Image (cartoon, rainbow, N blue to C red; front, side):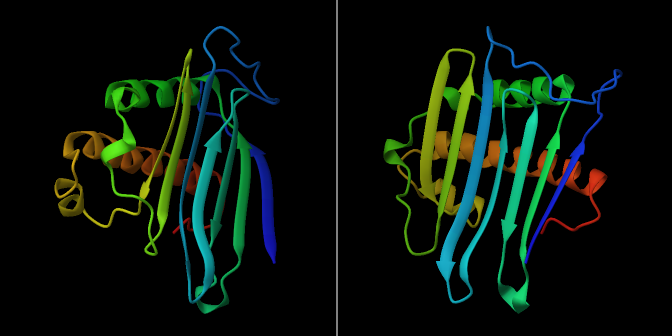
Length: 169
């Protein structure tokens, strides 16, 4: 069973009842995926923010016969601007995933970001702890990625929890 809910998230001082206009001059897009294929099937967490303010969230776990959770909402320009700020401050756009661990049987992570005129796409293995980050060939770059992902997950889980009656994890 798939549950899909749509709503409009109001986190700015102005009301937002429809998708915002995409910023053509300063486009922003972000997608994050983490998942693996295990004894419970394909388990994953994925979210994306589109230029028009559309936030999409999916969480699939078959553990104890859990179901696929899908949520979709429109966020305000203030949320998109906060995402832009978080990404810029992380300095992840200057990194390169060439020396990061390759995806393996444990799982994979993907992060795709379009920020203004710069487009990046990272792929690495699942990271269980900061200790794993320090063991790779590019610990500084992977650490930037790791902390950015933690911040993004925290923001997304907060948005989902605030506006839907589910527990995202």
